[in-house]
Image 1 (cartoon, helix red, strand yellow):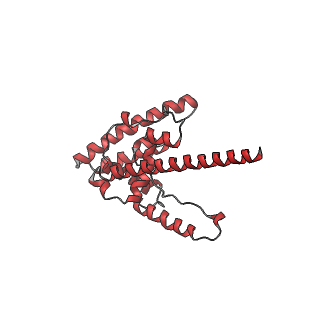
Image 2 (cartoon, rainbow, N blue to C red; image 1 turned 135 degrees about the vertical axis):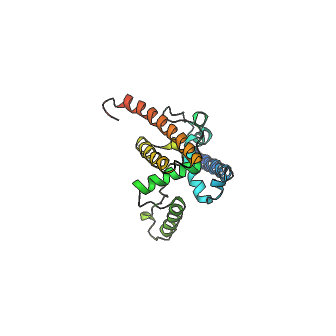
Image 3 (tube, rainbow, N blue to C red; image 1 turned 45 degrees about the vertical axis):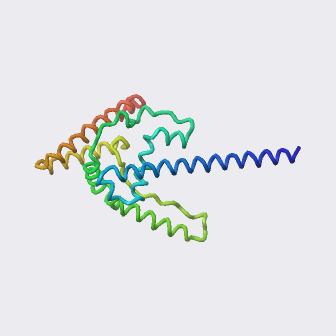
Length: 206
């Protein structure tokens, strides 16, 4: 009887290990597919490093239903999230200017996105050389949302302020001004949506 229980436990452990390994592989392939598509989507993204693209794709997986179902079989769409089929187009180059303005204004200790990735890699390499594994930690690059649809309510306020300033500074640049205006509309819509949910949860305050 004991032998049978041991064998069953071994089989279950092996099955769980295989499931986890398969899930990790599918998750990895999903992100790599995103990296490939994103890197070839525009000249702006083509110049980014693979590591930065990977970090951006890890953010964007929050919108990918297939990826989320790999990570969590019980995944259900969140009513607070605007998924790709409802998202409006925004210029990624203009969005980069917005996030850089936010970074310079509110997070002066943050480095540029590429430098943040390099910093995290360097620190993680140092951690890997530590003999005492119990004190090891994993460093993540400090990156701002790669999409306005990923922003918190507070970040949306920062984004609107940044857009307003950039629009004032670029009145003569009609193309950039249009791109920033489109982003402003998205930010206002997202803020309004988040306000609705926040009020429903806490009517007395945002």
